[in-house]
Amino acid sequence: MSTEALLGVGADVAGAATSRRLSIDDALTQHAGEFGRWQLRHFVLVTAAWALEALHTMVIIFADREPAMWCPAGDGQCGDQCAGAAAGWEWVQGSASSTVAEWGLVCGQRYKVGLAQAIFFAGGMVGAGVFGHLSDSFLGRKGALLVACILNAVFGLLTALAPNYWVYAALRLITGFSTGSVGLCSFVLANEPIGPSRRGMASMFTFYFFSGGIAILAGIAALFQSSWRLLYVVTSLPSLVYVLTVLPFVSESPRWYLVRRRADDALRVLREIATANGRRIPDGVTLKLDDEGDDKEVEDPSTAASSTGSIIDVFRSRTTRVRLVLSVLINLFCSVVYYGLSLNVVNLKTNLYISVVVNSLAEMPAYVLTALLLDRFGRKPLGIGTMLLSGVFCTIGSFIPGDDGTMRLVRMACGVVGIFGMAATYNLLFIYSAELFPTIVRNAALGCTSQAAQMGAILAPMVVVLGERVPFAVFGVSGIIGGLLVFYLPETMNKPLYDTMAGLEEGEKTLLK
Image 1 (tube, helix red, strand yellow):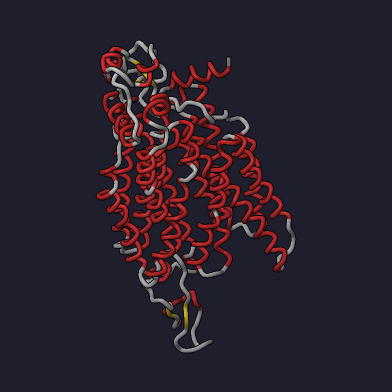
Image 2 (image 1 turned 90 degrees about the horizontal axis):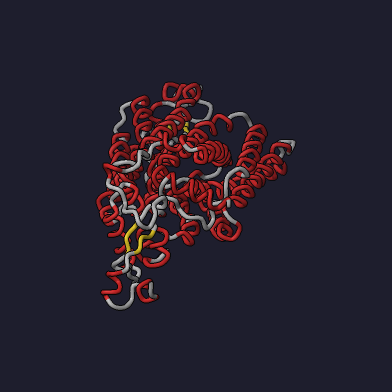
């Protein structure tokens, strides 16, 4: 085969006579470009959905806050605050300012605030598994993201009309069902068209959109302090705008097309990528799955392998089964620490809106560090190091005695280092988990790890109420155990992003030789 034919340059006859079957990674690396103008535009448009997830997830901080109360009759003239208006007390910003004020969720009813939060994450735990399967099967990555955003907008708007607490909690459950899958579907769709040597670095920028969404939410909430219902309307409409103005310009993943035996569509997307990047895919190039030889065409759907892209397929293989169990446990421990430390920061008793902005910005240095070190040291060493860093400092915080100002400050510093390390881990786990599983079951597997993370988010508030030092001990143990579990995962840096179960198994055997 001539050099001209290999590069797709020269006579059309030579190009037509040369037929080459490439995997998507090879096509991106050799012809279309690993991260050019097309991938940058696609990445920004798709990853913007993470900001929407932040709006729907964190809005409860402001909608369910407990506003200040005051006594119109003067100091000492009103009765028990738990009696509210019956004892002469009034809310400073009015009863419509939050769900706590409107439905009297104070004193003996305060547990309902935490219950609504737990219910939301429980919905997310179920939704992550359901949408993970749907996006791997007939719905596709783009289709699953579309449905999730529509449900977010609809049920977010309906939440603003909730007549009582229990309807409100039920609507938060349903909103959580769809919200829990937005980041998952967005992450996979944004990163699958990126070449192997650029995928890790690009993935590290995902959480900037989530943190940025939290900061934007704080600004929006500061403008609508007088009405929690209006706040839900304002934070739900962006999902509808996203569906109508952004998703129509987003392409489906070429990897999903290929594993669904739609090779022509996959090649069409790759040619669009090449054209936008100022490059060209030769006419003789066709695509293959990583478990196919060069002389075998992509199978027709009616004769395709029995793998359906469900979580059952993950458990059929010992390789992916072990990886999934480890990933679930690691994500669970990471989420307990991350959300637990985040909730502990709320107890600083500072301005709520400023605190949320500061907390969201404080995580960004961890993302920078992860991005800089990811392709230098690899996923595995970085995962071990960041989890152990968080676990060790949380453990130190649990041994710090006393409740005076200095000791509290030292314990707070331990918590800051802890959340720094765990924010880096949380960011890393998305790209690491995605690279551990082949395309055909990737979203199903990530759905399980997302469910584990949602379970950690449910458990975190229960840990926080144990006091000041005990939570640090729990977070420390969780971080250390999680870091030790990462030892048993394989390194994925500079390895192919496999398409099929057979391709992964064969690839791993080749690497062991």
